[in-house]
Length: 326
Length: 306
Image (cartoon, rainbow over all chains, first blue to last red; front, side):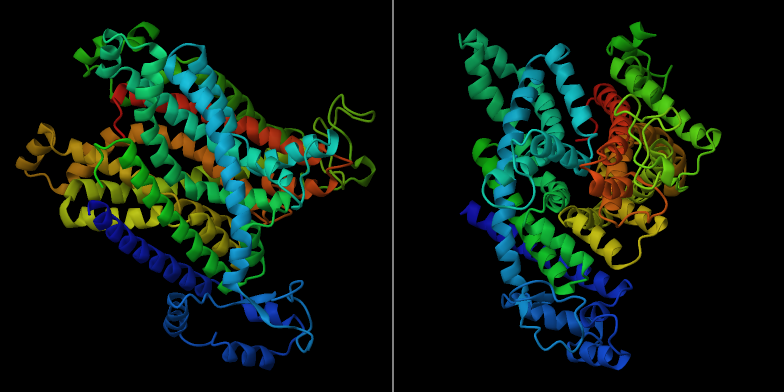
């Protein structure tokens, strides 16, 4: 019952957030200079034609009217059509304005649904690598505060956080794929293409995880229940594995929810470098082509994912630590 | 000095002697991480400030005869004139990297100032007045935290023309909520203290209490934390540059040098990798300083972030 109440409240909040995001991005895109119709029709199109296309598409209406029309569609599950991408084949941007071969424009929702599973796969592999690596370094550091594992964790996280992800991507691609030939890098033709991008993202994600683990594990080890455990005759390994780690993982979980939005920035860059056909590459192309409906759709879908992830994180956190309240 | 700072307990009896900010700084300065970071940073800062002028090499000057020279001791036609080699049209990589570092650092610091100004002002107001003001500001903060700002940032910069002030504002505006939260939580505990209540009874206005009593006391520890954010913003700036949404060429920045050098990766790997190494070194030094300061702050403050 409490869970249901909690879910209802959080989902309502989430809907409000998604509405705000779409309002914000919609207004921003129309206020900043840059005319998408010019890009769609091509540089040689006469001014009158551009005005005609813009009026036909409703781009000259007041922003409030446009937004009302758009959000009406979103509620019914229709994210609109892309400005520049046809339903099949390459982008039409830059083609001549009276090109009759230009086909139906692609649906934003289907473009996103095509790209999303690829990004989720990348995110899953990244999480596994990051959690295993920072688990080892962070727990070792937290159990030995002031000694070398702690210092090692400090320096590893300081260095990892200083590596720009796009640079690391280029260097790793040069090293593992060009020089050594171990892993493929560009495009996507099978699972192996996920590994290098995931390593780059994991390097970006792990410093925060390591720091949180070090501080939360070391804080748990000073709690009274650890000392009592020794008195009760429990081994050190058992106290750590069964009790301390369980409590220490709650802050880590909350962190993962918050880190999602910064990880998203990394995903955009990494997919762009490795030409990985996911949501990030779609975002970059949409921005560079001024594809307003696609940018809006991506913003809405990502904020929805963000809301869902944070709800799930809170639910899991309460099952791990029943003292937390919804 | 290290004896007094190493023991956190004894000095707590006579806190009037040194301010909290001073104690945090001294504690951080005694760690090896801070010293290593600071010495790297000073060397880089001096090089950045002096070398482009002293060597009088123009970072945008082309020299086709000296194109694609490798860095020192690598390959067979390296020269002392270009320690990091040259790019595809013969521009000196070292000078370009150093000039890029200038822009990157300036943008990093400026955007942190913007986010500190917004975040600390809102956080202080929320924490000091409480009640409805607090609720409204904190809901605003939550909403901003749950919006994927990166998409907003690149959309705005991608659709309009990226200029340096626009980049600074976008970076600053997208990252202030963290500071609002930190400031709010410290101000909330601090406003219950005797000296604030005494000032109120004494007839001080709220603005006077905030500006003359609270901010001078509470801001320095927050400033220490913001060192880490300078590094984050520098990465962010170079990321934007790499996507072509940062400072525009011919002005060299790390982002656009690396994006440019990526095309020549196979026959001249140093164009894309050397500036990144430089950037990584700079960021490591800043991060070491920042992380030491933050650790010191947490031990002195007893986790005031909460």
